[in-house]
Length: 250
Length: 276
Image (spheres, chains in turn brown, green):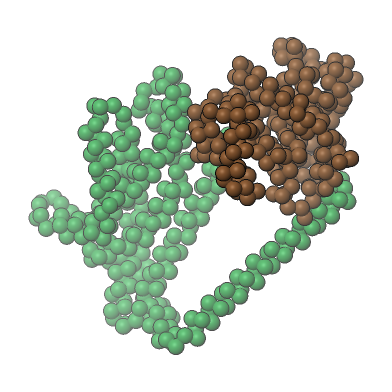
């Protein structure tokens, strides 16, 4: 593995006349944790959705281990198997138990026998700290627990790349910590992660690289202490000032 | 201002969609041809064509059948209005909570159970022949009115359940929000719950009304001269079943605009709710 796991080249995405992504270039290397920051509407979530091929791109490329998965000839369902996504609103299936949520893809897509899938899922749920909730349905869990189950679900098929889309934004403040601790562990294990977040303090601790998005363009990118500490661009400085004023940067 | 790569991708997508359209077109034509050939080459086809698809008989019976259809349309409109009102009332009664309302709830539930289970044709006989048989003064004797009563009784039970499903699908937090503003149960229902509920079940409602449209033809069993009855009369005099086919086609034509309206309404509702 020499090249980057994910390589985004000149990505463009528009909704009607609204150019949400305006030529984004970005590489994520193996074992790297890249954090996307920016105001809401800057294109962070759209970028993640384009990478997971949930949105059809209007121009540019998404390369996964060198393969152009944004090409219409590539089977998007197959390409997505190399990625795991965790959404802001958890998006657990309410009609399935926690265990079935986690084993669904293994059993249905990857053909793993139920017994093995459940053994692995239970180990995974144990690791994210909700092993005792395996038989419960998602509505019996707290937001933090649900989000940890969602992370377990994304990890179940051993993805090359983990995409986290503002996974703590819908959580109560006292539940944010438990989810971020889990992400920190995943980063320490050497997972390759691309995540969007508003938690600047967390970005500072865990990121190998921070990318600042503004109006669909990648304005600034570099180590956290540089982008968050001594940003080069005026737009980044303005954004960080607003964050500090809101008391969100510690 | 797009890259060559994207231009090539767009060309690929276009050619792929052209290919799918072509495949769909060819397979449809082939299927239709096979179906047509199978029917027309069957040994009994000449006789079937004479007794079911005779153009001359169709032309002669059309005015009478159309006259009958006009009666069906009027029955339909009146019944629809009555059904909506009655069904909404029953659904509202079924959603009342608290022990005081127990008898009302039981009555409403009993009504729904009875008339959803009772076959429409038996209900028509009971109302159409049983009611006048009581020889009470003031009761209607017109088969059209009696048939309409039976339709309203049965369909209200179905539509009430559709409404109830809609009402119960509105999240309890909406009720909490309305009650917290000081609205009583009735106003909460009318201003907050029902508008959301009705929008959600519109496709199901329109579906029931398309069904009602053709079931209006069943009032013919009571002797009302509607489209079906008119076709029967014409068939009896010509020894030919074509008038029935004419009536059937007219009912289909009547249902098409309703079905398209249902599609349109659900699409618009989906768009509005998707944006929310």
